[in-house]
Amino acid sequence: MSLEKVISISGKPGLFKLITQTRGGFVAESLVDKKRISVSIQNNVSVLSEIAIYTLTEEVPLIQVFENIKKKEDGKPTSVKAKDSKDKLEEYFFDVLPDYDEDRVYASDIKKVIQWYNLLQQHDMLDSLSDEKASDEEE
Image (cartoon, rainbow, N blue to C red; front, side, top):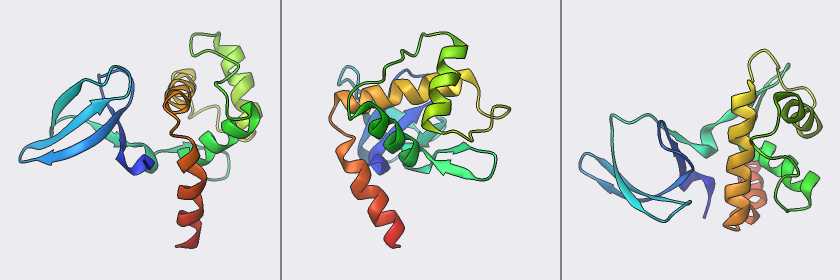
């Protein structure tokens, strides 16, 4: 499954995959506990494939950041935990994305990226990243 179908819903922990569209929104299933919820169009929703991380020169798509983490960790879960200290998280993120913009990317953002990566890794959804990246570059 591609990241086009994976979303983050403001105010709800974890990630969700889109199941179907309804008249007033859509139905999503939590990757954490498999519970399905109805999401209205009033909810603030972000599609993972549309998210980017600020660097000093450009915005790097989240897919590329996940790819960098996957390469660094050999496809395994991250060596840092989302609850680690701010300094440890920033040091780790500098290894993954050396020129990320420290003024615009907060520790809370880094925590989310690490949590999301680990969640996708746990559900074997990272293998589709390279395929997605390749198809994006062809367009």
